[in-house]
Image 1 (cartoon, rainbow, N blue to C red):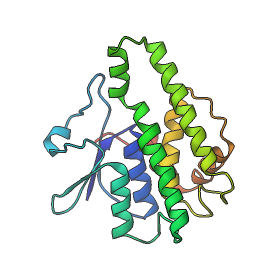
Image 2: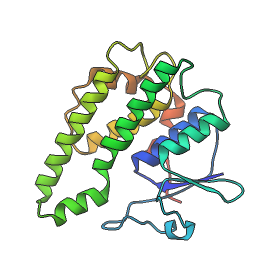
Image 3: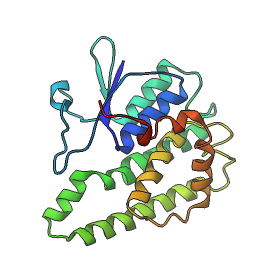
Image 4: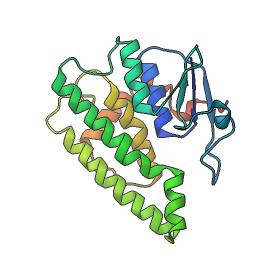
Length: 208
Protein backbone atom coordinates (compact mmCIF):
# COMPACT_ATOMS: atom_id res chain seq x y z
CA UNK A 1 0.00 0.00 0.00
CA UNK A 2 0.95 3.65 -0.45
CA UNK A 3 -0.64 6.74 1.02
CA UNK A 4 -0.89 9.79 -1.21
CA UNK A 5 -1.75 13.11 0.39
CA UNK A 6 -0.88 16.64 1.35
CA UNK A 7 1.69 17.31 4.02
CA UNK A 8 -0.43 19.68 6.15
CA UNK A 9 -3.86 18.29 5.26
CA UNK A 10 -6.03 17.33 8.23
CA UNK A 11 -7.65 14.57 6.19
CA UNK A 12 -4.29 13.04 5.25
CA UNK A 13 -3.17 13.35 8.86
CA UNK A 14 -6.28 11.43 9.98
CA UNK A 15 -5.30 8.50 7.78
CA UNK A 16 -1.69 8.60 8.95
CA UNK A 17 -2.86 8.53 12.57
CA UNK A 18 -5.21 5.60 11.95
CA UNK A 19 -2.48 3.64 10.19
CA UNK A 20 -0.12 4.30 13.11
CA UNK A 21 -2.75 3.21 15.64
CA UNK A 22 -3.14 -0.02 13.66
CA UNK A 23 0.62 -0.51 13.73
CA UNK A 24 0.79 -0.35 9.92
CA UNK A 25 3.83 1.13 8.21
CA UNK A 26 2.86 2.43 4.79
CA UNK A 27 5.08 4.33 2.32
CA UNK A 28 3.84 7.88 1.82
CA UNK A 29 3.88 10.24 -1.13
CA UNK A 30 3.16 13.61 0.44
CA UNK A 31 3.07 16.99 -1.26
CA UNK A 32 2.89 20.55 -0.03
CA UNK A 33 -0.30 22.42 -0.83
CA UNK A 34 0.55 24.69 -3.78
CA UNK A 35 -0.61 28.30 -3.54
CA UNK A 36 -3.81 28.79 -5.49
CA UNK A 37 -4.03 25.23 -6.76
CA UNK A 38 -6.05 22.32 -5.31
CA UNK A 39 -3.97 19.75 -7.20
CA UNK A 40 -0.37 19.03 -6.16
CA UNK A 41 2.21 17.41 -8.44
CA UNK A 42 1.42 13.76 -8.88
CA UNK A 43 -2.29 13.84 -8.07
CA UNK A 44 -3.49 13.98 -11.65
CA UNK A 45 -1.40 10.92 -12.52
CA UNK A 46 -3.31 8.89 -9.94
CA UNK A 47 -6.59 9.49 -11.70
CA UNK A 48 -8.35 10.19 -8.42
CA UNK A 49 -11.62 12.09 -8.96
CA UNK A 50 -12.16 12.30 -5.20
CA UNK A 51 -8.82 14.00 -4.65
CA UNK A 52 -6.37 13.37 -1.85
CA UNK A 53 -5.78 11.69 0.53
CA UNK A 54 -5.85 8.43 -1.37
CA UNK A 55 -4.75 4.98 -0.31
CA UNK A 56 -3.27 2.95 -3.16
CA UNK A 57 -3.69 -0.79 -2.63
CA UNK A 58 -1.22 -3.41 -3.93
CA UNK A 59 -3.52 -4.32 -6.85
CA UNK A 60 -3.72 -0.69 -7.94
CA UNK A 61 -7.14 0.02 -6.42
CA UNK A 62 -7.40 3.60 -5.12
CA UNK A 63 -9.46 4.43 -2.04
CA UNK A 64 -10.40 8.06 -1.35
CA UNK A 65 -12.10 10.12 1.38
CA UNK A 66 -10.45 9.88 4.78
CA UNK A 67 -13.42 8.46 6.71
CA UNK A 68 -14.03 5.80 4.06
CA UNK A 69 -10.36 4.83 4.25
CA UNK A 70 -10.52 4.63 8.05
CA UNK A 71 -13.62 2.43 7.91
CA UNK A 72 -11.91 0.17 5.35
CA UNK A 73 -8.85 -0.15 7.58
CA UNK A 74 -11.11 -1.10 10.48
CA UNK A 75 -12.75 -3.84 8.43
CA UNK A 76 -9.50 -5.27 7.03
CA UNK A 77 -7.40 -4.85 10.20
CA UNK A 78 -9.91 -5.04 13.07
CA UNK A 79 -7.23 -5.19 15.76
CA UNK A 80 -6.45 -2.96 17.50
CA UNK A 81 -9.91 -1.48 16.95
CA UNK A 82 -10.66 2.11 15.98
CA UNK A 83 -14.30 1.68 17.01
CA UNK A 84 -15.71 0.54 20.38
CA UNK A 85 -17.58 -2.78 20.62
CA UNK A 86 -21.08 -1.57 21.52
CA UNK A 87 -23.31 -0.22 18.71
CA UNK A 88 -24.48 2.90 20.57
CA UNK A 89 -20.98 4.19 21.30
CA UNK A 90 -19.89 3.26 17.77
CA UNK A 91 -22.68 5.48 16.45
CA UNK A 92 -21.54 8.32 18.72
CA UNK A 93 -17.95 7.93 17.57
CA UNK A 94 -19.02 8.06 13.94
CA UNK A 95 -21.17 11.15 14.58
CA UNK A 96 -18.20 12.88 16.21
CA UNK A 97 -15.88 11.94 13.35
CA UNK A 98 -18.39 13.08 10.73
CA UNK A 99 -18.87 16.41 12.48
CA UNK A 100 -15.16 17.04 12.10
CA UNK A 101 -14.66 15.56 8.64
CA UNK A 102 -17.85 16.89 7.07
CA UNK A 103 -18.50 20.16 8.92
CA UNK A 104 -15.23 21.50 10.35
CA UNK A 105 -12.53 20.17 8.06
CA UNK A 106 -13.95 21.66 4.82
CA UNK A 107 -13.71 25.14 6.34
CA UNK A 108 -9.92 24.91 6.15
CA UNK A 109 -9.76 23.81 2.51
CA UNK A 110 -7.92 26.25 0.19
CA UNK A 111 -10.76 25.97 -2.33
CA UNK A 112 -13.18 27.22 0.32
CA UNK A 113 -10.98 30.23 1.01
CA UNK A 114 -10.56 30.89 -2.70
CA UNK A 115 -14.31 30.86 -3.33
CA UNK A 116 -15.01 33.22 -0.44
CA UNK A 117 -12.35 35.60 -1.76
CA UNK A 118 -13.82 35.34 -5.25
CA UNK A 119 -17.21 36.24 -3.75
CA UNK A 120 -15.77 39.56 -2.63
CA UNK A 121 -14.71 38.92 0.96
CA UNK A 122 -11.43 40.38 2.13
CA UNK A 123 -8.74 38.11 3.53
CA UNK A 124 -9.57 39.36 7.01
CA UNK A 125 -13.27 38.62 6.54
CA UNK A 126 -12.50 35.14 5.23
CA UNK A 127 -10.26 34.37 8.19
CA UNK A 128 -12.80 35.75 10.64
CA UNK A 129 -15.64 33.72 9.15
CA UNK A 130 -13.54 30.55 9.19
CA UNK A 131 -12.55 31.09 12.83
CA UNK A 132 -16.15 31.64 13.89
CA UNK A 133 -17.50 28.61 12.04
CA UNK A 134 -14.65 26.38 13.22
CA UNK A 135 -15.20 27.43 16.85
CA UNK A 136 -18.94 26.79 16.59
CA UNK A 137 -18.55 23.27 15.24
CA UNK A 138 -15.79 22.38 17.69
CA UNK A 139 -18.15 23.50 20.44
CA UNK A 140 -20.58 20.88 19.13
CA UNK A 141 -17.80 18.29 19.35
CA UNK A 142 -17.09 19.35 22.94
CA UNK A 143 -20.75 18.79 23.80
CA UNK A 144 -20.67 15.34 22.18
CA UNK A 145 -18.00 14.27 24.67
CA UNK A 146 -19.93 15.53 27.69
CA UNK A 147 -20.26 12.64 30.11
CA UNK A 148 -18.00 10.34 28.08
CA UNK A 149 -15.18 8.67 29.99
CA UNK A 150 -11.61 9.58 29.08
CA UNK A 151 -8.79 10.19 28.85
CA UNK A 152 -9.34 9.83 25.10
CA UNK A 153 -12.45 10.94 23.24
CA UNK A 154 -14.46 7.81 23.98
CA UNK A 155 -12.73 5.87 26.72
CA UNK A 156 -9.34 4.64 27.79
CA UNK A 157 -8.00 3.79 24.33
CA UNK A 158 -7.61 6.06 21.29
CA UNK A 159 -9.64 5.42 18.17
CA UNK A 160 -11.30 6.88 15.12
CA UNK A 161 -12.57 9.99 16.93
CA UNK A 162 -9.09 10.81 18.25
CA UNK A 163 -7.53 10.32 14.80
CA UNK A 164 -9.94 13.00 13.54
CA UNK A 165 -9.64 15.34 16.51
CA UNK A 166 -5.88 15.85 16.80
CA UNK A 167 -5.30 17.13 13.24
CA UNK A 168 -8.37 19.37 13.47
CA UNK A 169 -7.23 21.09 16.65
CA UNK A 170 -3.88 21.75 15.00
CA UNK A 171 -5.68 23.29 12.03
CA UNK A 172 -7.80 25.41 14.39
CA UNK A 173 -4.65 26.77 16.02
CA UNK A 174 -3.33 27.72 12.60
CA UNK A 175 -6.47 29.84 12.25
CA UNK A 176 -6.00 31.33 15.73
CA UNK A 177 -9.28 29.83 16.94
CA UNK A 178 -9.78 30.36 20.68
CA UNK A 179 -9.82 26.77 21.95
CA UNK A 180 -12.03 26.95 25.03
CA UNK A 181 -12.79 23.23 24.88
CA UNK A 182 -11.35 21.47 27.96
CA UNK A 183 -12.62 18.00 27.06
CA UNK A 184 -11.26 18.15 23.52
CA UNK A 185 -7.92 19.48 24.72
CA UNK A 186 -7.67 16.76 27.37
CA UNK A 187 -8.23 14.07 24.74
CA UNK A 188 -5.62 15.69 22.49
CA UNK A 189 -3.11 15.79 25.36
CA UNK A 190 -3.68 12.09 26.04
CA UNK A 191 -3.13 11.29 22.37
CA UNK A 192 0.12 13.24 22.21
CA UNK A 193 1.63 11.04 24.91
CA UNK A 194 1.56 8.20 22.36
CA UNK A 195 4.22 7.61 19.69
CA UNK A 196 1.46 6.74 17.20
CA UNK A 197 0.32 10.37 17.27
CA UNK A 198 3.67 12.09 17.72
CA UNK A 199 5.32 10.29 14.81
CA UNK A 200 2.68 11.33 12.26
CA UNK A 201 2.80 15.05 13.04
CA UNK A 202 3.65 16.95 9.82
CA UNK A 203 6.79 18.33 11.46
CA UNK A 204 8.10 14.77 11.68
CA UNK A 205 7.57 14.06 7.99
CA UNK A 206 9.34 14.89 4.77
CA UNK A 207 7.77 15.78 1.44
CA UNK A 208 8.01 12.95 -1.08
